[in-house]
Amino acid sequence: MCYHQLIILEGFRLIRSFLAIELPEAIRKRIEEIQRDLRSSNSDVRWVSPEKIHLTLKFFGNIEESRVDTITKLIEPLVGGTPLFSLEVRGMGAFPNIKNPRVIWMGLIDEKQVLIPLQKQLESTLATIGFQVEDRLFRPHLTLGRMNSGRGKDELIGRIQKYKEEKFGDVEVKRLVLFKSDLRPTGPIYTPLGQIGLGSR
Image 1 (cartoon, rainbow, N blue to C red):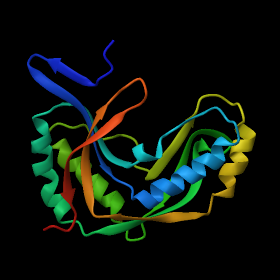
Image 2 (cartoon, rainbow, N blue to C red):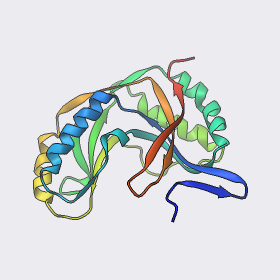
Image 3 (cartoon, helix red, strand yellow):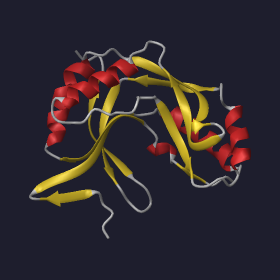
């Protein structure tokens, strides 16, 4: 079986892609430290590598490679007209709740309230070229890991609660990045296809 997520269909090259905000190296290093502490609970969690953690604003799925340029040009005016802003990485919790921690996350605080309106505008703009609007409410967060079973759950919960109010740092949002995702047995590999700067118009 070929795990490379590149599909040839009727002459079209399809790539798995998404639009996201990257994290600075300082936040990635802090995530690595926190994950090391959480891992010591010996819980059964599939941890996300810090270098692969980002904030996804729109997941496109498999698209024709030729559409990358169309997507970029369509959202450039919106993104370029959005001022630079900052997100505070603060707090830790779990979905669906702390007593049943299936997904472990770090919170994101947007004091200027730029992020959610931007994401909604991206959704509606991209819908004009056929991308379905996401039904689920956009809840900004960084996914650290996903539980595979209940092993070590109680100790893991205790460690998560230590960080429920902690500030981990800030993310200065200067651009959005369009990524290609190649699925491999060892995990996805993300490759930037292009970027759009905020405040460029």
